[in-house]
Length: 215
Image (cartoon, rainbow, N blue to C red; front, side, top):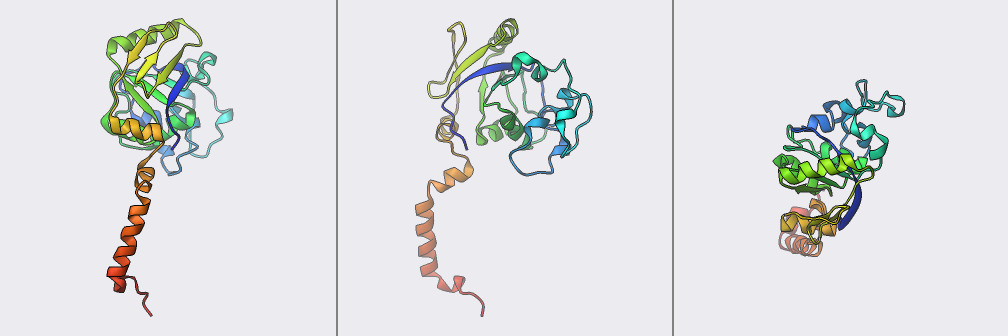
């Protein structure tokens, strides 16, 4: 998993509450268990004017000009500004896969659904919970200023706006450690690789009959 230390990124505002995981990545795209390739179908029902299908070439599909991620000023955004209860609905891990594949490293909202919250951190996305008033203010600033960027510093746990305002945020110490070190569940396990190997050797020596091949 890619390490997360600091993200200085363009902000895209998704002014919509209760965005569920089926809206983030519709159910027809869940057949694949690869973590990549979902970015073109992120918010598929909102981005395109037709119904998307797995394996479809999206380059020729008609775009919805009113959807924020299709607007030129938000191309290349890596910070998503959202409303309350982002990521509600089913527990599909494809939702953070799609966000990450599209290029988002940070999502800021007043609240997140619990399962999505856990899945996002495990896939290298920093979720930041801010008070509703602070999020409202950020929406106004983003919409009023083209090219609006935020400096998100995970180590210091603070966001710096273009005007120099600092917004502090809380994050669980273990999740913070995993993001800073680029550790997913497998990476965490491999930190104890030597201890695991030593146990396996000891176990094999103590119970060799368990490892004999049938003749």
